[in-house]
Amino acid sequence: MTTSTEHLRVAIKAVMLATDFHQSSRLALTYAAGFAKHFGADLITLNAFEFGPHSANVELLDHVPSRVRRNAESRLATFSSEIDNLGIPVKYEAIEGFVPSSILTAIERDRIDLLVLGTDHIHLGLDHLLVGSKTEALLLNAPCPTFTIGPGVHQEWTPGLKLEDILYISDISSHAEASMPFVHGLASEVGATVEVVRVPRTTSHEIAKTIKAAVNARGPSSVIALSVEPCGYIQRHLHTSMAYELLTSAKCPLLTIPVSTGWITDHAKQSK
Image 1 (cartoon, rainbow, N blue to C red):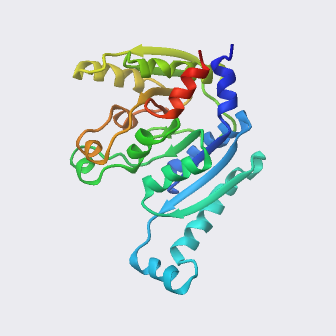
Image 2 (image 1 turned 90 degrees about the vertical axis):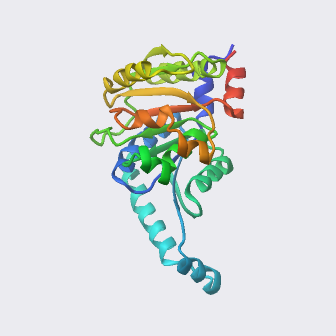
């Protein structure tokens, strides 16, 4: 019988860090490098950027890289070089296009098994309605697990993967329960403990407060894990997901696991 840990070791072959070069991206790089080193996985750093009219015309008419592209590639090369001393080979790429969809396309193309994100800004209330969040779009719609470092996570630069405990929030659905082998496999692999909190699928205000209190009690060496379902543009703007809300105050990373993709189906079959 294949255990979840064995499946995890086989599955994590490619890790992608999508970066916007903000402060949290440097800490995200630490985690991404830690995962890649621990599992012997390929590491790819990616920056997606959007052109203005002038840059688009430069590349279209002059057939040369625009200043925006050259700047993105230069910053990404410098950023990626920060882990050269860890002996982890890094591939990096700057791509132009609408940021969430460009990153999701790259994940599919490169067969990424774990996406790592860092975000310094959380949009809630009217700001969330009008602006939305690229981070939320990615952690809800990525076809693979996503490991997100929010603005509340503060930790010194230390190489390696240091995770002590995982708090898994389950809504008791079959999809959420199917993610359990992945969570336990990860915990076993890195020597972490697992605590499971099961909550009703329809969460009341009081239960939400209890969940946030449990999350806020965790430090930077912990991980909050939960399953997520794909969410469209309009629904995402009108209703802030629990996963995204937890990022507002969590002092530890958030691991989101997709429930409605081929990844979770394949994982559930291999874990039986």
